[in-house]
Image (cartoon, rainbow, N blue to C red; front, top):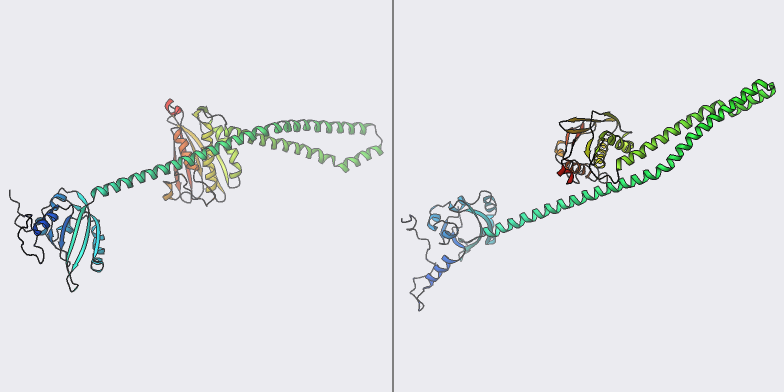
Length: 441
C-alpha cells in the first residue's frame, strides 16, 4: 500500500546550492548531506520563526525515533505542540521568547510517539538570521533521552529509598537509645530502692519501738503521780503540779503520739514509693509472664504522682481484669508516658481518669484527661518519632512512638480520640494471651 504522504518532499534543496554532478567518488555534496541528515541519531528539523512555528522540514529519522512519517508531521501546522505532554507545554511557551534574545534555547520534554507512549526528547533550537539581522528560520535537533531519564528516575528512586532506610535506621537507633535509657533508669531505680530499703527497715522498726517506749514512760509518770497524790503532802503535790504545768506534760503526751503516728505514716509512704520503684522497674524481668495490670498501674501512678497531683485529680475506675501475659515493665512504661502526657495537657486544674476492662479476649486501659486536646492535623502524626508540640527542650517526641512500638510488639493497639479544648482519651488494647510466635519474636 502506498503511503499517502510519499508525494510530499521532505528535504528542500540547500539554500544557494546548485545541482552538482557526481564526483570521482560517485557521491555528490547534496547526496552526502542527505545521507548525514538521514542517519544522524537526532531528528533534524526547521520551522518558521514566527506565529505558530510551523515546521518546514523534518528529517527521515523521525520514522525510527517517533514512528511518524516526516511528511505526516509537516502536513499539520499544530502537529508538534499537539503531541507534547500537557504538563511540559507551559514551560516551553513561557520561555520561547528568549530564543530571539539569546539565539539558542534547550528544552527537555515528553513527546507522544505513534505507539501512544511518551518519549523524552532533548530539543536544541538555534535561530538563523539574515544579513540584516532579521530572523528567517529556526533549526532544531531532537534527541531521544528516554533511557537517560529512566536511569535518572531509577537513581532518584533508589536515593529516596536509601534516605527512607537511613531515616528508619535513625528512628530505630533513637528508639533503642530511649529504650536503653529507660532500662538504665529502671536499674537505677531498683538499685536506689534496694539501698533505701535497709535504712527504712530499721528506722521503721526504731520508730515502732520508740512509740512503745514513750507509751510506757507516760504510763510510769502517770503511776508516779497517782502514788504521790495518795501519800505526799500538799506542798509536794503543789510542786508536782508546778513541774507538770511548766513542762506542759499533757501537750507533750498528745503531741509525741501525733509525731510518732505521722512519722509512721511518712515511713509507710516511703516504703510504698520504694516498692513502686521496684514494681515499676522489674529489673531482670524481660520474660513474658502473667501480670496484674492494676498493680502495675498503681505502682506507676506512685512514681509520677508528683507530676500530677498539683494539676489534676486522679480518678480510678478499674473493671474486672484477669492476669495478662506481657512484659510488665514495658507496659508500665507505656502507662507512665500516657499519664505524663495527660498531665502536660492540663494547664491548671483538671481530671485524669484511668479505667480498665476486658472485651473479646482483649484487656483495655483508658487514660482520659480534660486537657487542651490534640489538633486534628496532628492526630495522624503523634506516633511519629521526634514529633512533638512541646517547646524545645521539653520533650524528645519519642514517648508515644516508643509506646506504640511496645504495644505493637505485644500484639495490641493504641486508639486515640481527642476534642480540641476538651481533652484526649488514649485506649491501650492488650491480648490476654500471647501466641507462641509473638512471644518468641
